[in-house]
Length: 383
Length: 52
Image 1 (cartoon, chains in turn green, purple):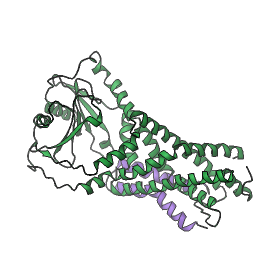
Image 2 (cartoon, chains in turn red, orange):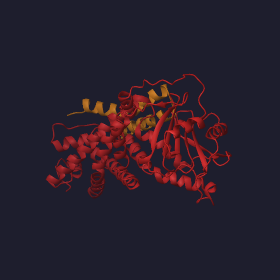
Image 3 (cartoon, one colour):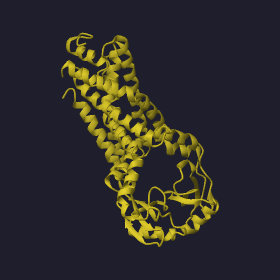
Image 4 (cartoon, one colour):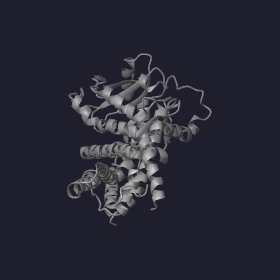
């Protein structure tokens, strides 16, 4: 590669990295505790709760929902979700179906007795703060899209770094770290070594992160396209004042998708469905399909089953991006690996900033001069 | 080969591990995590053996 090309790639690598580095440092630091979200929750809230009637038949969902709403007068149900490891139903309610997330109320109920399950929310405020900072910088959709752009810039930085790795390492064995040379050369070697070995993981996390930032537009697009025929002509109508049976809707959905596992129900009017339909979301029962949800729509005015609406490819990509981004799909060992690779990435980012600082002091592009050094033994032969 | 041999092997193992952990369970998860840990193994080996 000619010195001119190296300079061009070096410029691209330097500036694409610099623009996004501060945000990536934040994302790495907030992402670390988020990877261990479940373990931190369990440690802070040891689960001593037991169902009132272990092994007993589960209550009718309409009865349980009426019970939950009686505790929240004036509110309407928004979502119903189900714990996987205990007979607990979680009811999210709000003043109206389009209420903001911050104004939603969440409570858990014993599916065997209808009694309230005590909240296990120690540490939740901190985790919520970290998650929101990590997701959208407290700026909503603009913040998410901005972080998505930073993720794309990071991908450019990674690819340009790979391009530069070739000429730089041409005369060196893999993993050489020249500790006896100047600090600049030593840290350049660390930067190259850790950058190239973490390449696959970093690209995976960056690109799945970018997809996650598109969650809102993806759900909106799915709603517009996949549910268009159900919404057509009825946009102005609000949700039914006396909806049909929730339990019957869930039973119908289960019958329509045998072998699938109930995950959550979206009530008419919320963003995951139309103003007139229950959307009963079920997921598969294999390691892969448990991350993929399929909605079954039931008309909330008369209980008619509309049918299974397969999620389109972009919604499936979003569903798979979440575990691939957070590393929570293969138990604690993978989470520990995620944390270790995050630390290596922090070192790559930190060493990158250091190399840029040295470049400013020496006024010579470190990568260009380092390649020249490899080729001719001079410190800055090509600059 | 000298430049790209180890990085290509590490990248392939790492990517295969990360994806297969999503596809399997139990033993597959363990094997996949070990494969996905190739970057750590390569970095540790290099830092121990290649410092000069």
